[in-house]
Length: 233
Ligand code: ZN
Image 1 (spheres, rainbow, N blue to C red):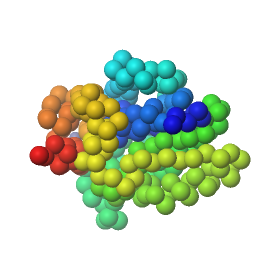
Image 2: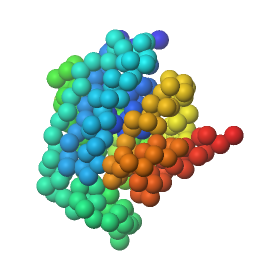
Image 3: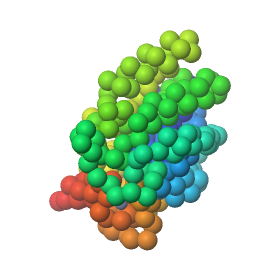
């Protein structure tokens, strides 16, 4: 059953959000996407977004008419606030507070608030994001409790009944590959390997069996291990 309501997918151009986009295209008759500039070092992921959207509509005719407008919003204030390895040239390391310095405080809270404001304007009831607390990097704004609290706050603050969907919340990276295979078969998995950017450094020069990336940052490490488990016989 396809839901006739509109969904807005937080689409960064990475593996997780591309899987979420396919998940939404399978379920909702109308799907729009939103991406955010926030001074990320891996801004190359923003270049991947239109290519992935074009490939999805070219290779999956059943999704073509469902995929609507793409939006890009500027949240450069996260770079202004700074202090993280995601927006500045600094070595990725664990902080004394137990959080990696790739943590951008408030990022997902800002993303979801901005996405909800856009969804309000675009008459979209469903917000879809790739937040996950299974094999994540310890970011507190990826936790299910944060998302559920935000759903309440956004609905109170905008007098809407938004539904925040996080299809990856309880699955690991291997299961995320498996979900992509379920949604779009080998073609979708291949598209994800070839075109999505997960690497924190935005490395597009080193191709591994799990896709492009530096191969050493925590995001590459998670993706490599997930792919190895997914593709193991
Ligand atoms: Zn990397």
